[in-house]
Length: 240
Image (cartoon, rainbow, N blue to C red; front, side, top):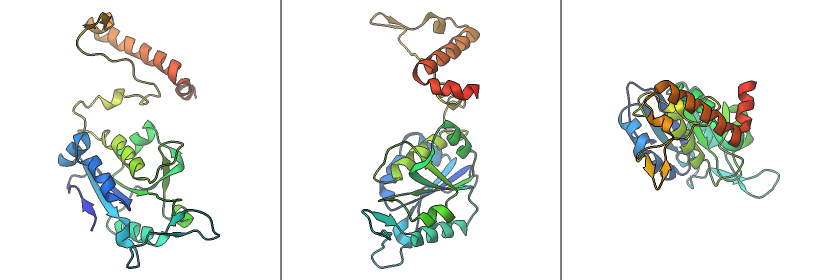
């Protein structure tokens, strides 16, 4: 049976994660903001051990490549059985495969996925999955960067974290996520807190002025300056 973290009749987002290593993922959702989101009935997260859908007594989920070559390949049969079982219970907006050669994950994708109701995330392993999984069972492929991990679990955790924090009610301040880096293709401006002076290093006077409009203007200017210096490619997107 899948590991059910929470049942919520007023579900906003349900995420089903298919993996051969459910224990690796579980701790991610047992603390901090993600745990609070689950406890407050804002999201459901389920783990499905792919080995439970294997057809032999060894619970095999991978095999050698046709045509030869190094590395094992995740078999289509257990993946198909698991996805089919989930789809028999509800409709899914996306069936997502976590893979290094997928579409780059960014804030806009996180925003989009946070508006969905039901998502499946498939964690790859070894050399990847049988191509027929990608051709016939997957609706979207996502990469968190141009590098290879030992499995898709950590990538799935990254996607879940980015998506769940955008769900209304998850963060204490509803406007916090709206001012994050990348929300408007800009990096966030510098931020400060107490004390106002430390070792002679002072907080910009404008932030202590109490003038909300001037502070907002300063933040917009700093965000633009910061983005121009560190990520000029983002500004090109604003021009397109």
